[in-house]
Amino acid sequence: MTIKKDNYERIAECIGGDQMSAPEVAELFEDGQFLKWYRKKYNLNSGREETSQQEWLEGYSKWKNRKMDKRCPHN
Image (tube, rainbow, N blue to C red):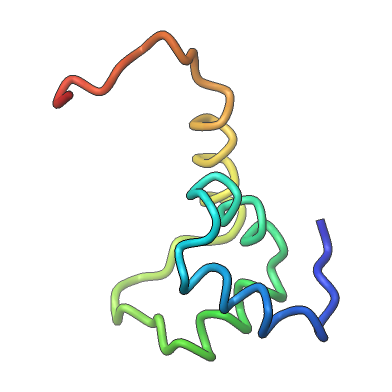
C-alpha cells in the first residue's frame, strides 16, 4: 500500500488519537516512506539498532498469518 504524502498528517493524527487498531497501523507502516516520515516527525528513534523494514515485515507477516485459536498465555 502506498500512502499519498498529502494524507500523512491526517493519518498520523488518527494513529495518535487511537482511532486505528494495531493491525491497521502495522499495515500503514508497510509503506516505508510513510514509516520514515512518521518516525522523523515524532522523533521515534530509540537509539538502539534499527530493525530493517524487511525483517519487520517478515515478523508482521508471521503474526498476521498465525492461527487465531492460539491465545496469549498471559490472558
